[in-house]
View 1: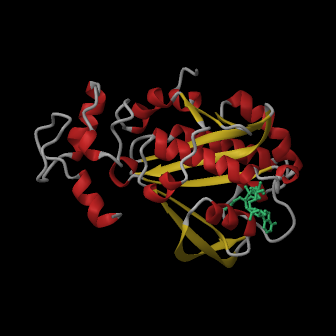
View 2 (view 1 turned 60 degrees about the vertical axis):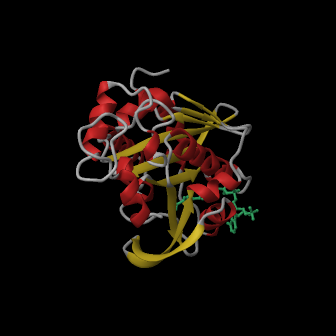
Length: 268
Ligand SMILES: CC(C)(COP(=O)(O)OP(=O)(O)OC[C@H]1O[C@@H](n2cnc3c(N)ncnc32)[C@H](O)[C@@H]1OP(=O)(O)O)[C@@H](O)C(=O)NCCC(=O)NCCS
């Protein structure tokens, strides 16, 4: 439990724990960043990326980037940072990003592991863990991911977890153009292999910080079920989303709820 709910969220699997990136945990992970996260070519990250910098600038920029991201959390855009712990040892990071999440229900992910921890299934396990948080904990409708075409490990993690190809895009990598492969995992596809051995903690406390009702029945994926014992703050969130549609707002707002209607056109 942490005084600031996003830092108190925890995801547990049989192999690892994703724990909110508190300063204490970042300090424990810092030696890994200092030793270097980028391995031999092909380079994994697009620009700009603190992890390409030389030490100690690398560690400073890495910390500042996380602090800045943590400070910007609001319902329109949030990023949750997790330290990956294996046998209580920090070995990497797994982030979850939501942009206008209460409307679109879409998340994306970002991750890295210490070079010595790669190739043992931990990358797949931590992505599976963060997907469980997104779909089961926050009620996401879909998750997306992208990686350079030559980043075989990341692309394979996506493929193996059921994501489907979703086109391509360009980005720069150390200043040069490189192609990204894009992936998309729908809630329905995720549910086909939903795991029963992953535990979540601190989610209810965190949901209002992201503009969601505290209760699990309320989510972008289940717009008809909102109004589940919500508090005033959550009800206000729903009223913001319920103007000008043809469905009664279950949260008690005056207008009508358009979130489900929009979803049919946009992500259906
Ligand atoms: C991407 C990353 C998190 C994946 O973690 P990982 O622990 O190495 O991945 P896993 O061991 O779970 O392997 C996942 C799959 O990729 C395959 N794979 C792993 N490394 C590979 C490589 N270098 N080349 C080809 N395939 C590879 C594995 O065989 C496995 O496939 P399988 O399920 O068919 O056996 C990790 O490699 C990493 O930190 N890379 C650098 C940072 C990065 O690329 N981040 C993502 C930015 S988009």
